[in-house]
Length: 208
Image 1 (cartoon, rainbow, N blue to C red):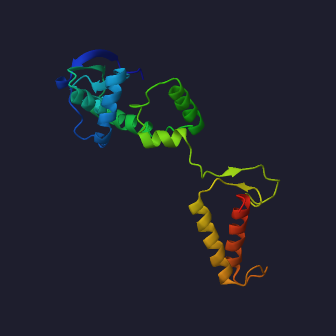
Image 2: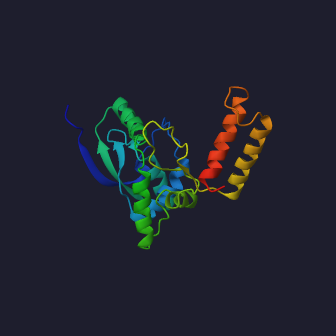
Image 3: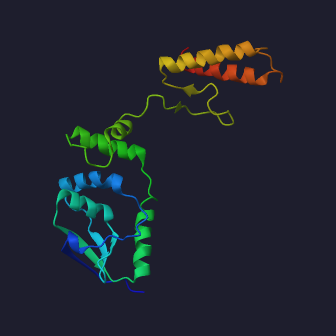
């Protein structure tokens, strides 16, 4: 089946008709998209059905343009029947959810942009998210290479912990010892022994 004809042009925003059954709630993204349009312009056109000017993809961009007071927006018209237009609208939203981020690559790109003096505002990440990406939490586990067959982490754990975290583990160790008997190798009160052993290993791995 040949691809539908696609024609692009600048169209008055009032000529476009948002899909009144659009199930995607995009109101929370309008301000950010408006900021992106203001900074970079339209990176992608609005997709609409030629027969009735119904918006297929780009509802957020249309709302953002209206919020910015833009009179005309770039539109690509598609010759689709109503059912195909609705299916494409759903697919456009759903398929965008399939992609994941490579956190290491993302951090590297953002860090380089920041080093080059770029303003990272308006890229879609709020300040807290940017801080998380650029400065990973200090409490992340750091694992060494484990000998084959060894249980992950036993004797190989390395952590960066806060004083509050250390205090929590020390209190857990004290509670485990109080459960007694402490240190026997049998099954009696094995939960207490296991908890104490984990706490000892954790404290030992961080120099406690």
